[in-house]
Length: 251
Image 1 (cartoon, one colour):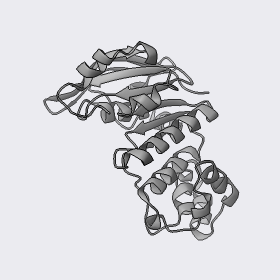
Image 2: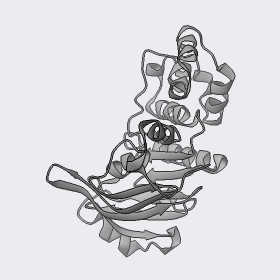
Image 3: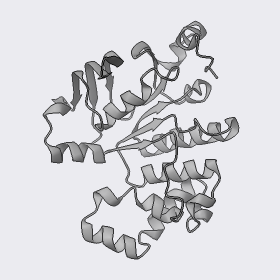
């Protein structure tokens, strides 16, 4: 079952500096949320809070009506296993094959003896090949990850996230290091993958023109606060101008 998340007056401070303040929002099963706004606004911190890899310093995060802060360690690990993050950088192991890099997305769900077998022999060949095929990089399954282009490496990182069939996919500006043409292609791939698998998606991006057609909501985040939380067709050009004012980052 895909978890439903509720953030109630959530904040996160680093020392004396507030990164997020008074964040109240909900994420229902199957929603596709575009998280937009200038760099330094708190988007990456919010992604980590949603993934359960970071705890708030104020407020409450609820998972299916229960405070995440009350979870035992095994319960927290089970929740985290339902989430996958696609980072700004692909974070692949360049000396390993594409197959091994994608397979690493399953290791946390396996018993130790299967992890050991995977280290000795390339198992799950068909499963890995299928997800690579869906992302257009199946021919590179046995190549070294370091031999790929930036766009191909990011597709492999997406495959690593999708291989475990997560309930929630969190994309933290995964196209930030790519050229505009490749960035648009990778953005489209992530959205289509989320739609095809009926998973919840939170996508941090500056490419509002791409995501607005297929996202159910758009959240504008600036200076650690929500500026708006609207349906895509309700976001006006003036709201976008205000959101990105002074940053020079609106695309």
